[in-house]
Length: 98
Image 1 (cartoon, helix red, strand yellow):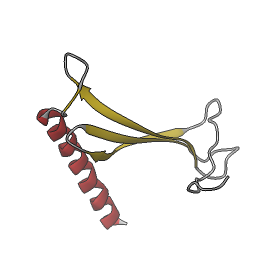
Image 2 (image 1 turned 135 degrees about the vertical axis):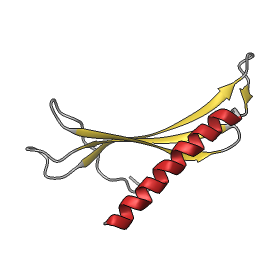
Image 3 (image 1 turned 180 degrees about the horizontal axis):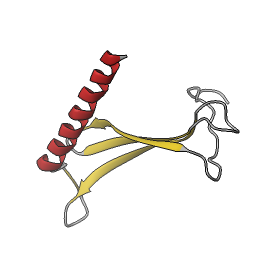
């Protein structure tokens, strides 16, 4: 494989695996919200360390009644910024404790 960024190995989940799902807002523009999602298989009997199984990006846009792209409503953008800000603060506080 050439030309692309290197990626960590990915592995399928197995029955009864413990796993973690993460989602985060990657970026917001007036017309789009981009989310990043990951699924990690946690360490277990057949896996010595956590392994990323899936990495996905979802781009969300809003449509008007005629199915044309429109700006993200201010209330929705504000709610997402508020949640993102609270999560960023919690992560910073947790990092300060370590």
